[in-house]
Structures are given as structure tokens and as C-alpha cells.
Length: 41
Image (tube, rainbow, N blue to C red; front, top):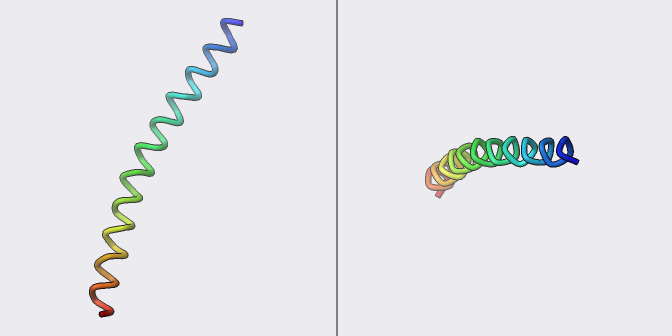
């Protein structure tokens, strides 16, 4: 039981880290898209 909760906890931490990383990448991609769209128009 404790092992299960521990693995779940770790999974949540990893998911949080990943979401943080992807959020940063997501904003970067959005900025690039905005810049390219401004360049196109």
C-alpha cells in the first residue's frame, strides 16, 4: 500500500515537472508562432 502511494506521489512530481517544462516550451512556441504570423501579415 505504501509502495503504491509512494509511486503515485513520484508520478505526480514527474508530471508536475514535465508540465512545467512543457508550459515553458509551449509559451516559447506560441511566441514563435506569433512572430512568424506577424512576419507573414
